[in-house]
Length: 423
Image 1 (cartoon, rainbow, N blue to C red):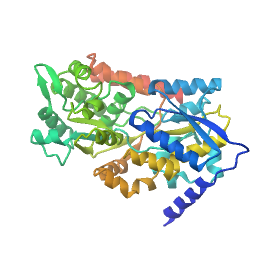
Image 2 (cartoon, rainbow, N blue to C red):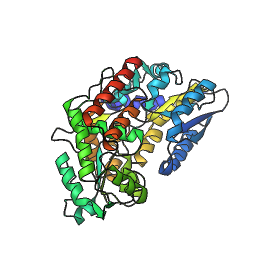
Image 3 (cartoon, rainbow, N blue to C red):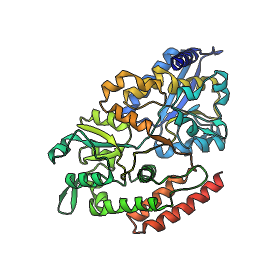
Image 4 (cartoon, helix red, strand yellow):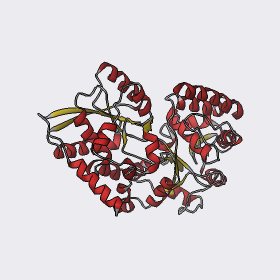
């Protein structure tokens, strides 16, 4: 009852739009490309309908240019009023590119721990300052997608996903297809995306499901036998089941669409590890999809929840009040944040939105996604160079022949130096 009353108060607060002396136009930078771009258009139209005195002009950025564009744009006062940010929000806030939202939050009496999932609050707060509010929430790479038709073709039960590393190895061997030495169908790529952020996320999730924690915000923790064993397992899986990473690269360039997720969506891979967004894409492409949790190494399943996508206000914004109205709409309003995440069958950072019965109608695996949420532990924010160090650690082992212990030791040394400087 108390939660319902608080949520009603939130809705009232969201509808209390201040009067402007004259209509204003705000700008909005984001990376919601592809299937999501029409959703952005629609949600902006809805915002403008409810806020006729505010117009929103949006610009699609590439993932690669986003951080630098926000940082440099703030310094030159050429950035957008509202920007899409995630884990780097703390660094951008410390560098003066984003304003703290605390004044707005306190003015409206918003109790964020009653609105968002509890594990989210430590992820968006830095030394008492909050530089952005999240639209999405929860673990982002904790799900194993599998092609049910391919499972049935090789005699696997399409009603369940592999739950342990040993089961994953067995399933992958049965699902692999070769033409000579060339992979024609991938079972699963445990190394993941050939991109920095994706590969870094994969190794952290494998580590935590082998009992190795990443860091606590100040001290790096993964230089342990479990951390080293994780990299050794990724190497052995790649060499013994997928016939080395060079074979995977050839597969991606010739058949697999360039990365693990696209290979699954084009039905040239039987499984992939990803987040809730992939179900929306798989449905659009008519892939017969099942979902399970990321396999663990005979431990209890665990998942990291890092800071997810949301929105902040640039220090260069000349319309901060109007920008705040848009940030609220995109993160806490049913017509904005709730609708946007529901259309993609992706979980919202707002607890109440994820209880919408429509989620269960759209995605029969919604209880699996919620189970992943309930198992989430927060991954403390880290310096922006962290993912590059993790990427290099994995790449040095999988593609360059460094032994796992040396790679982990070197990554630990580099990351600890970064954390010491950052703190």
